[in-house]
Amino acid sequence: MQAEPDAPSGLRGLSDIQKGALAGIVVVLCWSGFNIVSRFGSTGTFTPFDLAALRYSISGLIALPLFLTRVAVRDWPRYMVLTLFGGLGYALLVYSGFSFAPSAHAGVFVNGGIPFWTVIMLGIGSGFRIPRAVLIALLLSTCGLLLIASESLFAPRHGTEWIGDLLFLCAALTWAIFGLLMRRWQIQPKLAVLGIASFAAVSYLPVYLLWLPKTIANASWGDLLLQGTYQGVIAALLASGMYSYAIQKIGASQASMMLALVPAVSAIGAYLLLGESISLTVAIGIIVVSAGAALGALPNRKAVR
Image: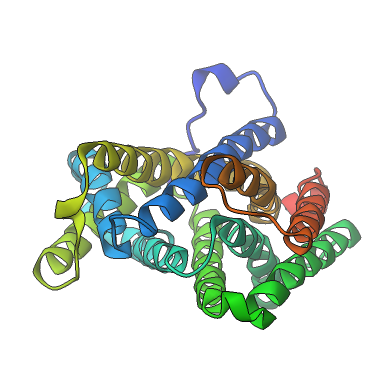
């Protein structure tokens, strides 16, 4: 039986909802930067496979010794399943998506798609009765997604962006499954992070080194440091751990809704740092989906249960 997730010492005087909300805010900040940094890497020196290798070589090096000493072998199968959805599946899909579509699209389709898939699966799998506020939030988020998708699917100058959008939606589905499994199995967030990083490194790196295309040798030390630090530490360890902690404190539905706040932050950051333009349609979509996220993340006892 898994122990209750450990709270950081500075959060022990707060309620579960406050702890979960703070953890969700950390995830929003981490993932906003992740969209920008990953888009920068995917359109520059690195292949999607290079970024995944950086993510799991660094996080795996840190996690593997700790995981082997803290988790019994009989418990490994669950961590392997978590790795499939919250590790390799998510990472490879989202990194590949960045090769086709801009970071503003990732912010909408990944972070807007996660709450959509989460609530849909809760409703289908467990008879979850969706509160009215969550339904309205989903409607707003879906409208925002359609506004963004309309530009990608029908504008000739963005003929390949729909491929990235589809990959982002698939990545959102894998992450939603990961969140629901974490909630169901009640695995400690720190152990989940260690397990995912460990199994991803052991299973992926040999395949990458032997067979997958790579251009990492052409990267500068500055690019390697930026991508390695963000992918291997901030994204793989910090953001994943905080999200796992948030879903155990406030529920998978509430935590996933907070992620839809990422589009506005990542789009603005991409505009300032990468020079990516934001059309009126994209801007409206970002505002709408962010409004839906804010509404869906409001405390609701039924949703938390």
